[in-house]
Image (cartoon, rainbow over all chains, first blue to last red; front, side):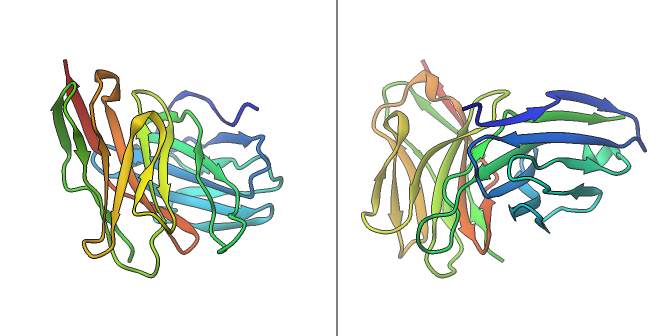
Length: 117
Length: 111
């Protein structure tokens, strides 16, 4: 299994450009999420999905869109890049626990380092 | 809102000494607590988790964590630190449908 893969690893954009960060997992996980990591702020949740066709907003959703057409893929779209979106982006996936309705351990991709000029 | 605190930005410890990385969580039902480690230019890796049961949880690479309900804490520990343990450590709590992460603690183990 490749686990969680993310492309690209690095990206430089100009203000106003749009792009899509790709995320895929081959573990048949229902739950997928996108985080951004900024110094001193830990990981902040952007969007998440509890299954194909279902997405919801996290803590910092503005400026980002997501869709979940398949179980495997969960792309993150930047609509009009801004310097404030310069960050490292992580995708993660996990499976539901058998009991309790909670998700289990998250598996993280290697990250995409994005710079917006 | 649920929150996770890691009161120390940086922890320095000498190789061979015991280490502790602190984490406290806000009270809301039964906590579901995790520790993750991040090495430079890598994604987060799972270390251990607490769901219910024994308050002392053992995880990967010789790490363990102690859950203390009265102090709402979940401190990460290791009896003897290695230089290779130097990394960024995150505590997380599962709340609602999502994980809430602490800000991270940078651990430096000095040879």
